[in-house]
Length: 248
Ligand code: NDP
Ligand code: 8X3
Image (tube, rainbow, N blue to C red):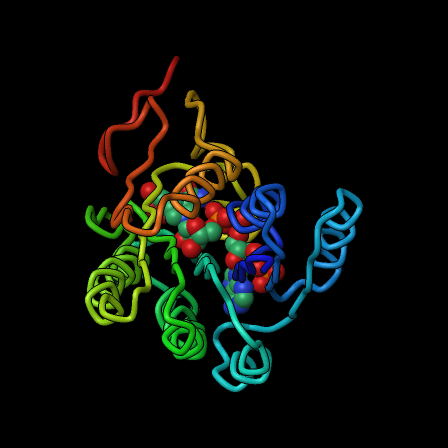
């Protein structure tokens, strides 16, 4: 039977690259996100290359939308919980609480809503693999990033706990925790300020969405008895949240 991969946040960056990569690996793809046109373009691209892609347009922050879209799915072999964002980069006394809500509602609650619908299907099937996209921010909190870092610390804790919860059901849980990846992430963080976003990557050769997709495709194809629990990936010029070597 054809394997089915569900990827949240497939309209851009890591999620879109993962949908393309897993389609090339032979998965049928369910690509989700809020931007319908981008999902339609991705579907056309995957199908032109001989793959299969279904698209679902919904906001992971809405439990009702998540349930309406995902409950009808018969089965999912691989769930990539990728949808997420950073919004703002401010000291705690100046942060915008709307940014905080967006990050917590998307990165934490959205991941939980999706997981709550998909895991019973995997438990019933007696197999499955969940890949949560965490971050190095999930273990290394940095100045100006309290709420984003808190949301990724939550993903780190949830990943470890759900791995234990799902162990006896034969479901693997992998957390992929990237450092700097050049996607639309910084543009979103700076509310559309492209110049400021470009500065994040100045003097560095960052990872790409394709690099992370390669790692996801690798962990997904390991033999049944073998799991990667936690994978940290960084550009060669980065050693953690606090250390980046920028070429002059
Ligand atoms: P992008 O901004 O390029 O992609 C984010 C994706 O998430 C988009 O497809 C977007 O789709 C989706 N998304 C955001 N909010 C929602 C929502 N409310 N409902 C549904 N989908 C949503 O960033 P990245 O690819 O870099 O980010 C992907 C993940 O990787 C995030 O969880 C991020 O925290 C994590 N990460 C990124 C790093 C980086 O340096 N780039 C490093 C470490 C982790 P749409 O807007 O169409 O809904
Ligand atoms: C994204 C990487 O360093 O901006 O999670 O937090 S960082």
